[in-house]
View 1 (cartoon, helix red, strand yellow):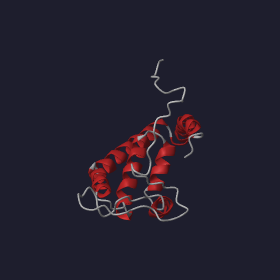
View 2 (tube, rainbow, N blue to C red):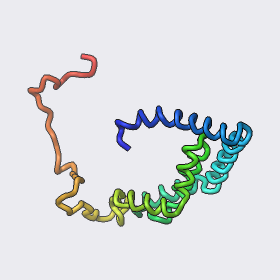
View 3 (spheres, rainbow, N blue to C red):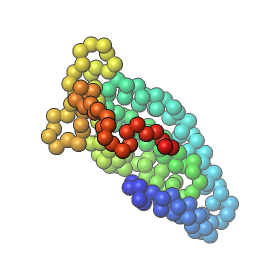
View 4 (cartoon, helix red, strand yellow):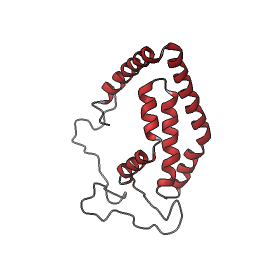
Length: 168
């Protein structure tokens, strides 16, 4: 999501949720509306508890080992995201959470984000052995990998900012 629309989204989501409460409340009544909100909260807590913090630990360990998180991690991660959205009171977030739980939507999200994963140092980890060269050999790549020997900048003594500190 672009940052220019993020503030509008943050402001409009609560308004949309309030409108959803009004529409659903008029259609089914106050008691059933509150029961639906509480049921979605309980379902979110149950889903979150079922997945637990284990998925975060697993992602962290696979990331440290240089393994790209795959589809087997997508299902629990998307379930955690859906559970958090179910905990948030409102019908719009509940609809998005239910959509996230559907396998075709998960597949679509996987295809959208899989090409953005970058695994660095997939074999070596933090070993003390000889370092492999993992630089991207694609000439159209936006990745620039520089060692300390590749880039070193001497301070410019003629700069008007040299020798000054913050607040001077």
